[in-house]
Length: 282
Image (spheres, rainbow, N blue to C red):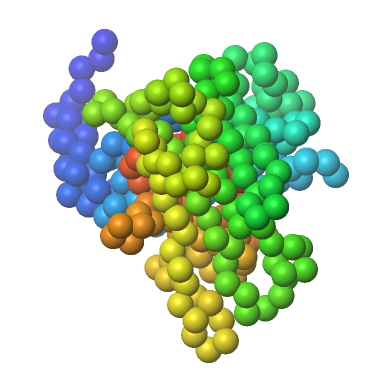
């Protein structure tokens, strides 16, 4: 093992000091997309900053990519997760387990986006409804056990493109997390009933969040994203604690196929990406 020189050790110490003082995200990725973010991955805003892109490799369903951003809001261009609609479900893969360079090789990328590729994480399944469009998130490690429920107020395509309408209302439920930062399993009698429990206002074993109400100003409904969202869209939203209006997550459009996703504990990266995917698939 090579010993570090004094200059290298001083540089590493200075970098670690800057990370702690500025709470900027280092270049290393989290150990697991299933754990809540640690302090080193959180900006001074208290949120993790991420970029979600949408790419059409063919005329069919797009491929979505999740990447972290640095302190200047730039993507590190290191894919963390991929997602693609297959059949009736949106499937998610851990890109960190795909050989480097695969994202530039369409054939190789397709080979790694299968349920048998070894990097498959889980799926997002849509549930129809009259008042709400609902999605259930499942993890491949715990079959048939929900990791999240995402409910969006049902609006017609015509309403989505009409100017001056408020953003779609959103409700989200995710399981509570342990002190170690991992998801706690729901009681047996509540498993796979997260969507129904949100509708019935049952919150046992879950964290439940709702969309922040926008302010009406000069004929438009507005939310303050602090520069993170630049394009008006019905898909833009902020999630808050109902009790104190604390910002937990936000998602919004920054280009035709670019979206900013910010989140904090108790969300982990897998759940946050699923939240963005559910909004994009409506």
